[in-house]
Amino acid sequence: MGSVNVWTGRRASALQKALRLSNELFAKHLTVSTRTIAAWHQDPEIEPQSKVQHALDAALERASKADKARFAELVGEQPEQPAPATTQDPAVAEIEGRIVSDPRTRSILEWLDASADWLPGTSRRKLAARLARLGVGELEDRGARRGRVDQRQIAQSLAEYYTGPVPGYGLYSASYDDQTATTSVLTCPEWLDLDCRLTPDNDRLDMVSGTIDGRVTLDELTAEAAVQRLAEMLTLNFRLVDTPLYRLMEIDIRKGTVSGGLGLVPFVRYALTMDLLEGELVDALAAGSPDRPGRLPLRDRLMPDLAAALDVSSRLCSGGALALCAIARPASGNRPADYVLLIQERSGRVLNAARRLAVIPKGFHEPLVDFRLDAQISSTLKREMEEELFGRDDVDGTTMELRTTDPMHPSRLSAPMRWLTEDDSRLRIECTGFGLNLVSGNCEFAGLIVIENDEFWPRFGGQISANWESGSLRQYSSLDRSLITELAGDVAWSNEGLFALMQGLRRLAEIGGDRVDLPTVEWEIR
Image 1 (cartoon, helix red, strand yellow):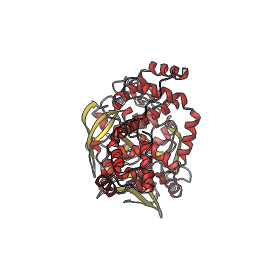
Image 2 (cartoon, one colour):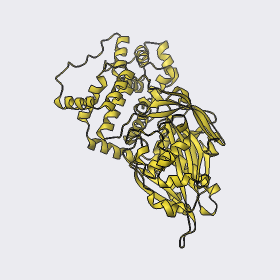
Image 3 (cartoon, helix red, strand yellow):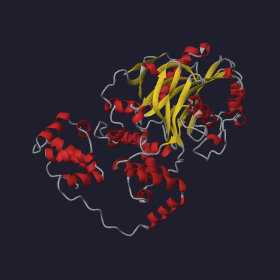
Image 4 (tube, one colour):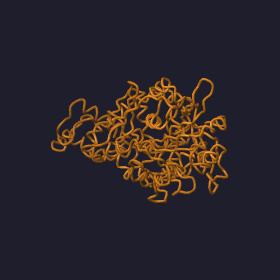
């Protein structure tokens, strides 16, 4: 059923039932009050106002085929019949053959069929048809449009979407030198200024379960969006390897300690569910469309409110660790001793924060080979240093299969990392804050990495080279207050990157001594 001539309370209630939404969620979906929904149940013959008629039309138009079929059955009409089968396009058939020959893609599609309750082969045929229509130029143009949506717009739109406050929690904001940075990171005072050296005594995330849980039930809307995302990733030659990610299931973050419980999920489950939320939001902002509840159907389903965002045990909450890196540099000529601060511009080939500024290192919290030991945040940050700063391809699970029993064994470390780990005083790794990024619901462990020893920069500074995840690498002096203030105000930041930058600058100002002249950062929870 494709349209309704006149909506009544009875038909509106039937649509609610077909969409399987509560009164509260259906009200958000239509941008009306809950009392309006209740009135339709009480008076089935009532006719909603004109603007609500249009909202109901739009809701039916956006509904999945399965939802439309349920609605048609509930109102006693025949659902639309699919068009008769036609001879398959040769180009589509050729693409489908290539898909079948790739065991990794085939495995992902089998998971998608099972999760969406589709007949085997359905997602393969859908994917082939979309690949035949997609072009790189089209996706590059969309990427350019997305790039015009800046960090402040994203933070503001999410603040407007998630209007129902949760006592004690709010969005991270920081003032610095008469300026203010706002982010989409949901946090609380207990999760900030942790003063937590990531040593075995303090770095205490642990496994709740070591079984990789790929089970999920996808509705029609989410499944169709997942197929489209997969088509886009393959068109752009995205590095898609279905390795396990850590999933945060319990949070216990407090001053001096990072602890909690982790499970495991396959990467594809994240990439084709929660990570869809960012694209939906940014595309809506780029098009100038409303981004409130009822206009972002994937977000309405997967993370509709702040309570859902905080309930990490009931939703998929992956994410990672990222850290501001400060490397001691001896005095030279007229320049006194300082720290080199490293900032990256992410490449367009990464899943998170593509084409945006971020601190470096930054990576998903995921295991290498030892699921329990690798659960420590410091393990992820050291691995990311090896990948993103010191050029170690063999610890990058997106480029090759890991077949080494201990990729971070001292005998395999890069020369810079081996030197740093030979003496505990040479490398300081701290967690400066924790939050949940409302862009995709990710957990964000913000950190500060300080290389204290003056010998490192003269010896190894020339060996620092960003990998494929970075489009470019910048360096700033910790004594250049004006440039760092400008950097903090750049709208090209990712929200999690800005969060880590501000918390890192705040902590470095406390411990950096004469090597730093940094803007004064004061945080606020809004």
